[in-house]
Image (cartoon, rainbow, N blue to C red; front, side, top):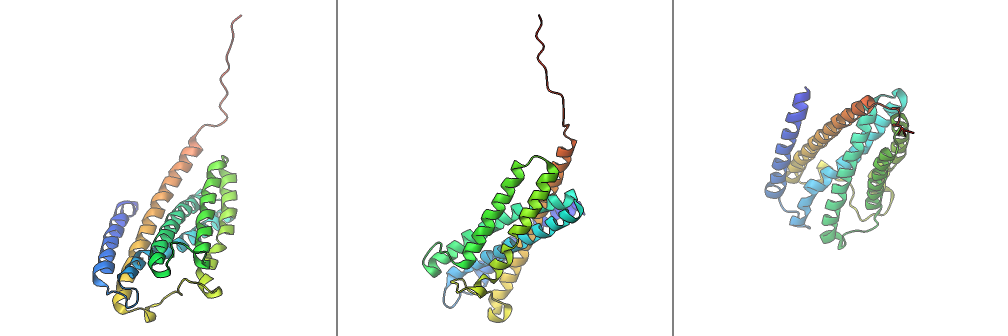
Length: 230
């Protein structure tokens, strides 16, 4: 099982990403109003979805740690936070590339964009917190509480286009998208979801190895004493 996850999952994810890119760039038709520029949505939409899924994983893992204090839950939370930063970065970058020709600016303080940026910065701070706390139990507890507070931003990101007058378009669904576009989009969402799982699993294994190494490191060793001969 582990071998399939370690080797098979990344390979399948890579194949699907390539297939999805082909479908989005070569098979899907041009959009009636935006023309070819809309094609970046085949990366932007899946990465935006993963940028919300990752913090959800972090929140669930953090709650699990606070309830049971398991090292596995803490490792999963840390893995999810790093993956969240990665996908939030991709979401912001691709969104800016999409926004320049459609909105006329690389960045605007739109509620959706701003709330995603806050999520991105917050998890960078979360990871910094983990680096500055040496005690494993305190680090895990403080990080779990911090992650749960950060996760409040997830529903704000999702509902921002409904709650406020926003430049960002509303979420689409299959009934509002041409089937020739919806098919490639589903392939890309599946592909990037597998990329998400592969990265999460890999970082989780690294985190567990770091925990084992930290636990086996001797502590409280006597300090060396310099003896002066008289």
